[in-house]
Amino acid sequence: MSVADPILRRGEVTIRDLSKSFTLNGRRLNVLRGIDLAVGGGSSLAIVGPSGCGKTTLLRVLAGLEEPDAGEVLVDGSPVHGIGHQRAVIFQEPRLLPWLTVLDNVAFGLEVRGTPRRDAREKALRYIRLVGLAGFETAFPRQLSGGMAQRVGIARALTVQPEILLLDEPLGALDAMTKLTMQEELARIWQEESVTMVLVTHDLEEAIFLADRVLVLSKDSAIPPRLIDIDLPRPRDRSAPAFVELRKTLMAGFGLH
Amino acid sequence: MTLQSLDPVVFRPISWAALLQAGRTTARAALSRYGLLAAFLVFWEGASSLGWLNATVFPPLHLIVAALWDGLASGALVDDIAISLQRAGLAYAAAIVLGIPLGLFMGQIRAVEQALDPILQFFRQTSALALYPVFILLMGLGEASKVFVIFWATLFPILLATIGGVKEVDRKLVEMARTYGATRATVFLRVILPASVPQIFVGLRLSATTALLLLIAAEMIGANKGLGFQVMNAQYNFQIPLMFAAIFLLALLGLGANYALVTLQRRLCRWADAA
Image 1 (cartoon, rainbow over the protein chains, first blue to last red):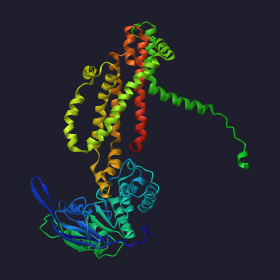
Image 2: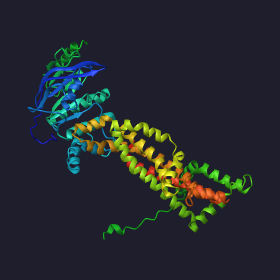
Image 3: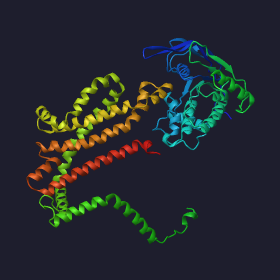
């Protein structure tokens, strides 16, 4: 079952020679240096790496929340600057407006973009159902558990029907059990919505479970990032030998066993 | 008409036991909440009537109630209430109309807030009562100085609470709104303003109390009407029951204002109560 209209979404992301540095306590930190990357329309990419490797910065540049020092980001072949309607961001925290009900929170993105309230709500209802929150439309964020709140955040992003979904450690704050359920949900939603997904995570298993390819960033920006294809059939089985083998390889790359 | 509506009405016998039980529950709740207040009033009446208290300073309650009734029936106290409400209301409304928009503006622009904060803190710490003579010099002893001193005292709590509310808005929510393409105006209307409402109400409630305080002080100096004047005047004329009647009305005014604000806040901030 697909909630989305059967339109062909593109959402191809190209990054060309992207660099970004910050100045911290008078020291210049090259967070990203000369990153080149292409994410095919409708595919999913996970960005992993140790903390401080610039994975969140890369995502924020893609979202248009940070401007790169050099290089450019292209969506469907044309360069983008700042925030654009093709992209929606899901943050680690749900970032819900506490004074709005679940329904109004989900409709918020569309309303901000100028959709009349009636239409926005109608669409929001469909996505509330998609993330499994039917019956909670009139609840306030305070009444929701962490996992439910994050589902609302996901529904809000999906409701604007972006070509590209940018996720910044979206399940990082959830407990282990909820996290596993939500990973399955994200895999299902990604397939149903045929949206391009760029996911920042520090969880290697999550990356392998969800992504077509994994970009491994290093803390030393002089070391070029590695791109690993995850050639596993979907839906993915965490206990499959190939899955376990891939996880081992990735972990070894971080010096973990 | 359908047959269903012709069904005989069932008369249920009144269950006296249940009624008694309900009454008992209500009584217990009322007792635990208002018991001490009632005991205090009974003690006052008794102690004064029996001569344990000096009845000239603390007249029995029934005399105070009688004075209150006379004052209200003759319209004398009604005029006082009206003029007091007008003074405090005008000043309070002006403080709201100026304080909330100014606070919303100042809270968002860091440079403005930083430049104005020291002077605001200075004014806030300067007692409005100490400045009353200055206002009298400037505006005379009439209505203007009275309203202005109340306005002055109520402005700062509202202004500072509003600035605080805006500054405390979660920047992450603002960023979220921006990722959906929200303009500055949309961010203000849909994120910053609603997020500041609880803080603004803190200022409004604080100011309501301050308004009544300053009202009484202002009416004790150079007024010939108003509840504050009546407290002072009744004391001069040794109409002690009338004095207490005016004090009682002032307390009632404060309770009423607070009740109205709390009710309004509950309506506007329903989301904060939901648990």
